[in-house]
Image 1: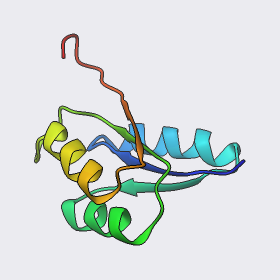
Image 2 (image 1 turned 90 degrees about the horizontal axis):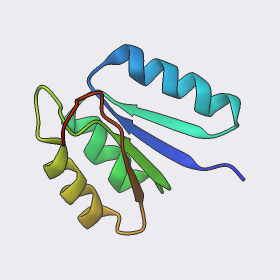
Image 3 (image 1 turned 135 degrees about the vertical axis):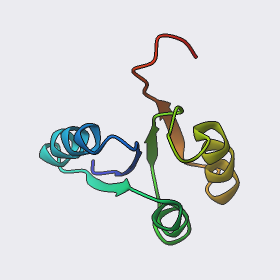
Image 4 (image 1 turned 60 degrees about the vertical axis):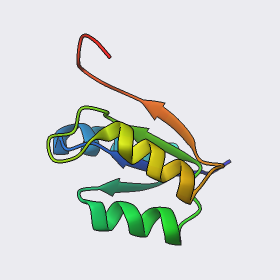
Length: 86
């Protein structure tokens, strides 16, 4: 079963590796590089899962999660971080 997965991370290497891995499993992947892309993806696409790094350099990842849940309550969220604490 194919899913549409949104990746929100400001590390482009992480985005690319996750995209490659998920596309090999036949998932549709959207990688967000900015607020406009993120808003557009949440409004225009049926996102099954959002994978997010909460420690983003230009925005608050937890606020992004709150906005995403308002825009698309059925979207599941996976928090993926390289930080030692949350």
